[in-house]
Length: 615
Image (cartoon, rainbow, N blue to C red; front, side, top):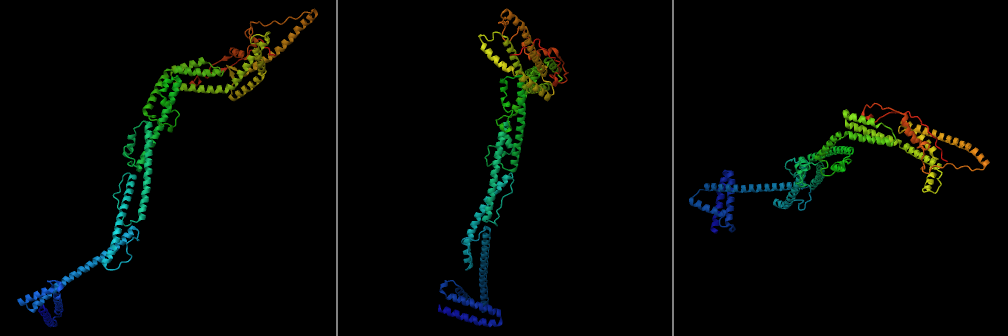
């Protein structure tokens, strides 16, 4: 070992001596040789180091020296080979240095990228105060990378979670927007990773809540519309399923609530459908009410029995109902309306065949109204005119009946305007009847006898005297009322064809004549009784009693069948027809069928015998 070291050192010295000569000639060779010597020296040094193992640079150079010695290589060749070995070693070192520099540059770039990524993540997430992020980096590059790696890992996980949240909320927003837009897709949504802050996420959540509320409101409107369509279709007798699916297939009851369309187009179509159905309902109800009114009028016109009317109670029950009150299923179905139309047509045809009977029925009603109102008409002439109009066919039956209804309404109005006066006339006539009865009662010689019912007659006589005392006031009031009525209506008030004022004037005149006759008879009786009184006084005889009224004659009657005790008003009413001329006006239209004009020339008929006033 010692020999090898010494020989190596000697070789090194020898090489250095020879190299010095070459450096004088070529500086570059001098530099390279010096480096070679250094390399060899390092190799020899390494060969002396027992810790480097068996195969080292020194052992290899030693082996190379032995080979050269055996071969007999020259020093130049040896230097050349050593320079080549040195260059190869330098290239290896250079590559290692380059690799180390490149690795350092990559680490620096990685560190820079990590810092940039860290900054971008904190900016995107909107929070720069994450736990674990070092404020300042120090130490080697790897130490700095090791310090920043956990923070980056945490931020990357946070970013992934935040992106997932953004994706979910944006997906829900896009889905609801597509439902509102009617299924029009805007393509897949892309999350903007440049801003993943909680504030932006909260904004998306707020927008989602607003859209969810809008969706709920829209869904509620859709359900309300569908319910309204269902009710209307039930009332109108329409197919609900075909009606609602025509708007949108998802509105079928088989689909879930959340699956129903809530788009603007669906809501608009549902609103139009509801409006159309409501208008159809109004029109059908109006048509049904018209038919119900026609049915009721025809039934009343032809006295249809209740059994036949009950068959159409489902029609007539809505005759005065409002649109909102009609809710029964099938109440306004087309077949029901058509059924009512067929019945109206049938009754119309039946009405034409019974036209004369119906017209005469209305004429009888008109005559009854006039009779109760004591208005005199010529029914025979009117009936003949009705017959001629119906037979000729010149007038529509409906027009004729409408005209007769109008005349009936006018007759009722006229009768109502005459009612107060007629009531007073009846009271006046009743008082006159009582007055006539009281006169007969006063002439009865047995009125105070204890016969059966005498006390009832006494009570009646008392009441009759009170009533008779009011006759003058009754007549005056009746005259005033009659004149006021005639002024308001510009026509004469007639009672059974006789002017009422003429009757009252005649009654007043006859009453005055009775009073005068009463006074004349009283004076005449006194004159007749005076001679008998004187004669009886001379001969002392008693006067004979007055001849009593026959017991067979009932109270309130006269033997001559009337005379003085007959009610003046009744007598005038009956006798007035004998002295008046009647003429019929020419009938030009159905409205003049019962318009009969009269020209009364009734003259007062004086009473054959004066009626004695009651005591």
